[in-house]
Length: 112
Length: 114
Image (tube, rainbow over all chains, first blue to last red; front, side, top):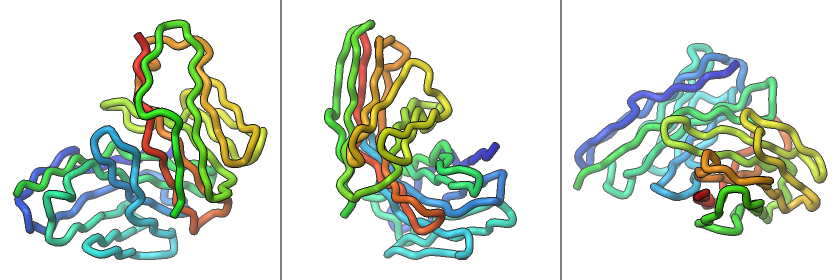
């Protein structure tokens, strides 16, 4: 059964810093991996989707990488801003089912 | 832009009441999902549907049922609400196909059962 973990659970950084969030998964037979952001009390907003055949995806200040063989993905946030403060979740869709399996999230605080 | 909407942002119900949570998506997606999210437990899949009138149990279906009479609408039903069903409920949708399909979420319904 696929298991997804995220490290660290929480992170606090000063504004302007570059940072990396980590996501690990146990079963490398995946279709894709999706990163989300969630603001307190709100739904999930899709940030990036990486296909299993891709190594990375970029959107603005965000860059997500995927190393399927080692079961890892990273989300890189450049020049962090207070507006980036949120919980970031990764979700993996395996080839054996229709559904995503979610990690527990990393709670990010960017201090002005 | 994909829009997934949920009927209520906040809902307060009493134990034993029947509760309906509605979700509507406007992108003709085949797949729709209901999750609940609790502190320390993350997102857990309750039910999903891959077509009209089709439904599949997720990881925690006990105490819930669902209805999908139209492609754009997926309802979650709590037949007799209990306090342990107090949670944030999130609906999502996605089109068919293996790869190039993101999952899109609604804004969530915060349900409190007293």
